[in-house]
Amino acid sequence: MPDTLHERRLRRGRRWWDLVSPVHGSAGGQTTRVAEVALTHLALGPGAVVLDLGCGSGAALSTLSAAVGPTGRVVGIDHSPKMLARADAVVRGNGLANVELRRADATRTEIGHGAFDAVYACASISAMPDVPAVLAAVRTALRPGGRLFVFDMRLVPRGWSTPVIAVLRGVYAAGAGFAGVDVLDTARAVFDDVTLPDFPGQEGRGQPDGGWPPLTMFVARTAVSSGSAP
Ligand SMILES: C[S@@+](CC[C@H](N)C(=O)[O-])C[C@H]1O[C@@H](n2cnc3c(N)ncnc32)[C@H](O)[C@@H]1O
Image (cartoon, rainbow, N blue to C red; front, side):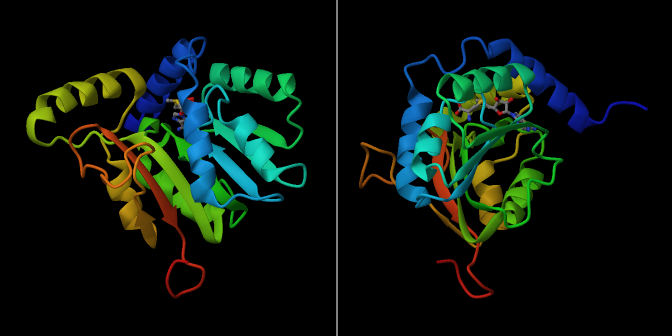
């Protein structure tokens, strides 16, 4: 049977992330800092259950593990075997007994039904071949009132950045299987409430609605009941 577009994108992405896995996360601990910022937005406490979606080489695992403590649990999901091997080295090397790693295509796996208090997704959702499917799966996986923290690319062309973003979109699609779907816009359609905190160090400036920098940071919530989000 011929490959579907999804399978081709998934395979392209896996090859890319396997290839870059030896050097991934070596750019000055940026991901670890994003995880520390996420803690202030995810309201994680001892005993919480948190998903690290597209955990990559495991840069956030120690931070998340410490936040939920020995009575909590961290589940890291990734599709790249080589990224997961690096994440596993982090888990073993730091004795993170409350962390479990799973290899899966997060867009086609049932992640869980209300099993998680929080989901952390740093630079991972835009790398997945089906953004609407993974956001719907995350919504299902969160308990009512649970929170999703996202830090990601936002390749929405605007003004002078239009040609630059067009090039970035092309490179990201060719290299890592980017499907061209905007993560923030999709999350706004899937979740009950989406808020955009200011980037650290840029308080009061707000985030650009597309354009430059091509990044976004947001918190999405599921409603506590059929009423509104908390
Ligand atoms: C840019 S890396 C980010 C890794 C990590 N979150 C971090 O901040 O260091 C993107 C990760 O998403 C993973 N990924 C891409 N598509 C995926 C999919 N369909 N299911 C699970 N993981 C996927 C890749 O394997 C890669 O490790």
